[in-house]
Image (cartoon, rainbow over all chains, first blue to last red; front, side, top):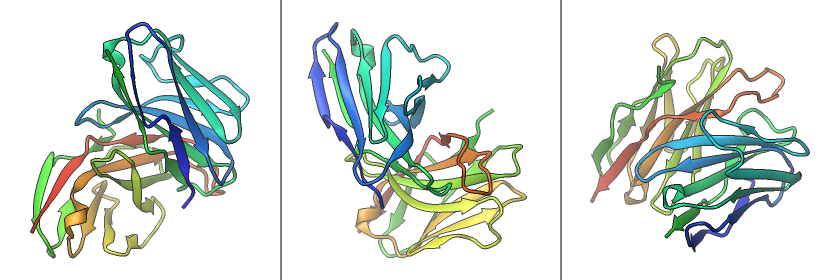
Length: 117
Length: 120
C-alpha cells in the first residue's frame, strides 16, 4: 500500500510555543488529507479535513485559529499547534486519500506524539 | 447517537484460536463502507479489511474476515488462528455516502476500539 509519513514522530515543547507537524504522501498524490487526534486509550477523533489549495474544514469544537492547517501541495499537509498548552498533549495522526483512488484507499501516517510541558 | 459501536473494551484469546470482535453501525445512507484497522502500541493505524455496503459476499483478507450482516447493521471482524502479534487495539470505522464511481465523500468515523490480547 501507499506510504504516508509524519514528521516529527514525537515532540516535547514548552507551554506557549508553536509546533508544526508535517504529513507527506510519499508515493501518491493526495487531494484530501485528514488530521485526527487521539487521547490515551481513546478513539481517533477527526479534527479537520484538508484539501489541496483550499481552506481546511474543521470539525465542530476544533479551534481553527489554534490548529492551523495548510495543504500547500498534493503531497504535503501541515498542522501547526499554536501557543500549545498541556491540554494539547495528544497523539496526532494524519491520513491521506489518493487522488482518483478507489473508495477504500485512505492511508494513515505513523502519528506524532506531542507533549506540552 | 453513536455511529459505530464496539461493545468489547477488551478481549482475550488463546494463541491459535479464532476470535470475533464486534462492531455495529448506524446509518441511514444506502452507500457506505466499513473498515477495520489495527493499532499496535507503536500507534500506527494498519488497514485490515474493507466491506462495501453493496458487496454481497463477506470480505476476506488472509486470516481476517468480516462477518457482514446488513439487516442487523453489524460488521464483526473474525481473526482466525490468532498470533501473539495480533495483540493490539482494533478499530471499526465507517464512511458514509460514497459514490459508485469511486468518488469518496464522507470521512471515516471510528468506534472506541477493542483491545485484543493474545495469550501464549
